[in-house]
Image 1 (spheres, rainbow, N blue to C red):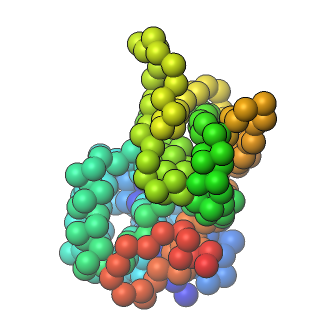
Image 2: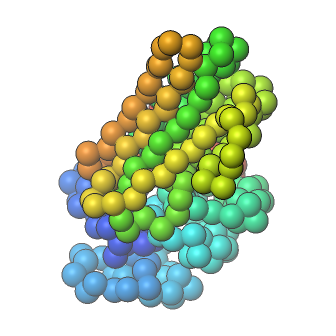
Length: 251
């Protein structure tokens, strides 16, 4: 049985993870950490990480960027691996996570779904051929009105996958409103849409001469991210220190 501390248990994703793990025979949530305690959980909830001393095999995090630093320090202090699902992290935070991964196992992914991670793999394989053939890469991401960060972590990961496939020759453009010039041949445009209850849509467009190739991933439910996080928790429990991602989980 894999025992889990759920960080961000009172948020939207925390509630989805709670429901999914409740149906899992070999995983259980032993405690939650969140600034808000909804008082309707079957496990204890602590409003401060330091107050949670419940033994656990792994932490699943769906919180906010500002809460990640405290969580990482907590994981290191208690020697508990972390499945880090929060996006919108700063370069400084990412550097801190890499340093912490020398002491504990940390799995960090911009998107926990299997479909997105297979798309990342595919983009690394095809982007070099497409861009060398004159195709211009663009990314459009859509999310619900409550999402704080833009572009999404998944959009950034998609751009990075394209760039890796091209040997790192490209730079990213997030806003063309102030520009009065034609498109740079070495840019990846990334656009964000926020509205309604859109769970997540990512379109990757390769626009060539008289033809367009599109890759689209649509999330219809947050359950796909929660399922990925649970699979990651099973994978990470008991792992040696290091920085892992979903590619390690799906093989």
